[in-house]
Length: 264
Image (tube, rainbow, N blue to C red; front, side):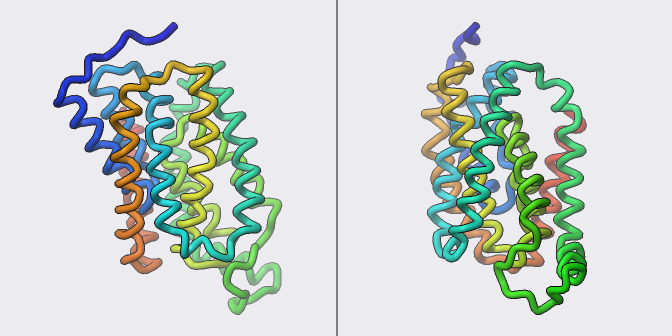
């Protein structure tokens, strides 16, 4: 049954537009922007499920803006982008279906702990990646962009894609941690790939929800434009940060996101 309509007056429109602008930028820099835009949708009066699916659809342009802004860093990543992108399509379809047919309460309970785990993985990523290279005999001189192991990467990315379509908060942080461990490349390039995969997951989920869920299309119209602008602004900010600074900004924001979800 569709949720009752929400009267979007000027103040509510301004809140949604501002939240999606910031969310688009945060998703391009780190991930976790949904924890800005999702509460804004709740604040203006949408029910939780409607807010969740509306948020997914509305933030798609933000991922488009981030991916366009990161075109330079995506060069040379075609193979991994295609493989992980196709895998993300399958995972996103499963996650979208789970959201529509099942109660999200149990999954929402473990979401903060998944985000904390992702932050821990990202913080430890340099040592974990170096240990993985030594174990497979590649040493510290492994060429930039080389894959560590496809099997664990595929499994981890599939789980991230399911989660990203089901709820999504912090999925960018998870994917950046996963890519950082299993792919030998700069964090800026991995951040660009993370943004592309996030776009794939969100688009698949958005199409699914457009036909099978209660999307608040007026709110989508308000938020989509500013999310697009925010995504491009976020890339400009991220490019000015070195890998170490970017890593710890992502970790710090992820902890904040996890704590925010934990305390409700």
